[in-house]
Image 1 (tube, rainbow, N blue to C red):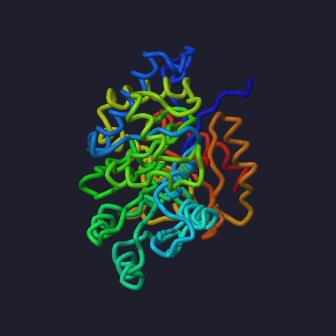
Image 2 (cartoon, rainbow, N blue to C red):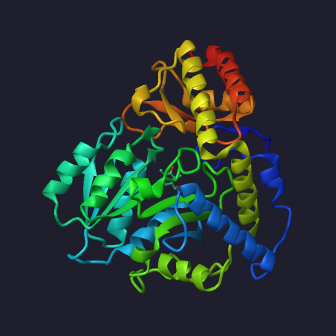
Image 3 (cartoon, rainbow, N blue to C red):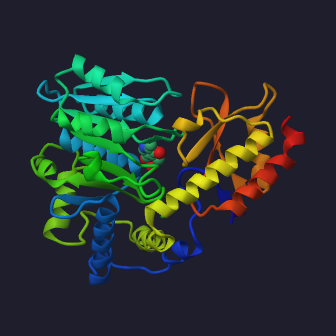
Length: 368
Ligand SMILES: *Cc1c(COP(=O)(O)O)cnc(C)c1O
């Protein structure tokens, strides 16, 4: 067995012992217990998002988060069509991934590309839309995990929707950790996954879907397994029934994780904890001579990019020294500056951040 360590990464992340323990049961996908758990999860997700059935459906889908994003694009947008056009607003790798999916799917798209250290803003989006009246669908990232920047979806999406455009948000690394109300924000499709801020384990994605729109998309997906319409209709016609084998243990862990989220005080409370973690981390890192890449005003509480402190800094040695002290962090993913990233989500609180900072201090001789 590998040595256990605390994951300070944006998912998979550190889960509670009780979430891990919930997986110690083998359930049949046809059993009524399992069907009831799936339905409970679907209804709790809608509640978290501030919406309800039958207007919205929480569609669970096997695979990682990207499978959910690709299912949304493939199901909503016709291929090789001039009648539909997707606008992708991108300021990092996950935005670029949406554009790449659109390419692979032969979906007509136009991209607004913003530098990685700058937020996507309502002014940029509306100016771009003025130039592109052909846009019918709009996709953007909430927390761009590439840098940890938080894009202001609350000022952007209502304006996009008011132009009659279908709104899609990749809230993979924020849903459950940052309050998001789909009705207030006029979100038609929101994608997230089991192993991020809900604090479950990997195995499925979920899409909060506007049913009136989704139910016009029968037969449009070129993929059978990623057909979000078919998946939604399966849950609608046979409550709790996924198409194809579902990750039963992951579902049990997720059910437990949702009850722990509610016990913690809900998303608002979790947001407070993540925010406090992130502030403590940045203050502590600053005291040790590490600067955050982003200004506080656009920084999310989810993950923080730090610039490497000097040209001699060796990330691999730093990583290994921290792993020896039972902390695992992430390499940098931005091209803006040499960097590394530290997540502040999962079962992580003040004592863990303090312990991490002490571990980093103890590596200073190695890395300075
Ligand atoms: C994690 C993440 C994804 C999905 O990545 P997977 O590796 O497929 O789980 C998509 N978008 C964002 C912003 C993410 O943080």
